[in-house]
Image (cartoon, rainbow, N blue to C red; front, side):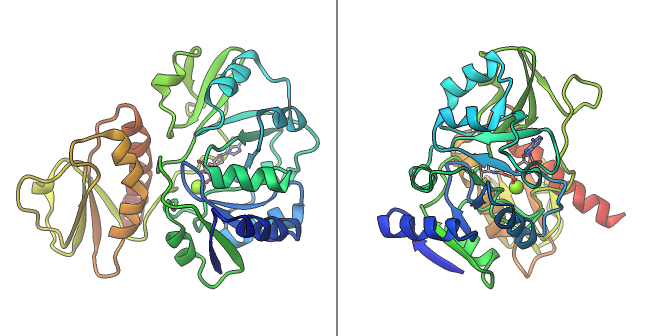
Length: 324
Ligand code: TXA
Ligand code: MG
């Protein structure tokens, strides 16, 4: 593991040469850190699955450096997709389209579709454009664990592995991209993320892809993503905390005394953007060795709150499954 400042030209040059040689580079995006490989090199992409211990049936997002690159990797691009690209790229939106043959089966886990995203983080863009090829990258965490929003978290998670980490500071949005596919002019949401569905609704009809009987199917979404090592318990407030051997992630600053050993809150004022920016890094920080449970205060399910609650529910589901 090698951690270097991603804002220097030497760092980018080094990262590009590693990617060209089929190696792995972790890089910052505005959402979370990604663990990248040359999307057109199957051996390099295979390393991502191996190092993350990610099941081969879970497809990767392909990151592009210009909007126009989409035409090289996808076909039958509906009007609404073009509108979304024009409006929200570069940014926290992944769009699922019919793939061209240029995209390898290992990247899409055999699916006929590919998830494409153009990130806005300057280090990410600089890296992809300097490499002049698309970069396949999942979030830079071991499979199932919380996504990292800091270079140091990535470095810790993969400390004995052969990867180079570009440090680009804290990911400003702090939560993964919103993922959508299309059915004619309808936008199907596969994952709630940093771009609110309320925003998307201004671009067309929006439906959830989750339900099996809808027009879109949602492969690759697994029930236990995003979980810390310690069990997560969603509560309404600090009064529900029964054990001192615990961490508490509050939404806003707790007013009363709190029984937990470690306490953090997502935002002083209940600001959703600020809360999302802290969300994963605080969860990682509170995932301590010497506690039994992480209590998390319920977050209002609107805007980014919906994206955070979706991840918390998955994390707490793992807890319930393990208990029973
Ligand atoms: O913000 C993000 O999206 C970050 C940064 C690094 O770009 N990436 C990220 O990747 O969160 P990952 O692999 O952790 O999550 C991507 C999700 C997976 O759940 C995968 O199943 C889904 O996207 N996905 C990718 N391609 C897909 C496809 N063709 N059809 C359906 N789901 C797809
Ligand atoms: Mg992930």
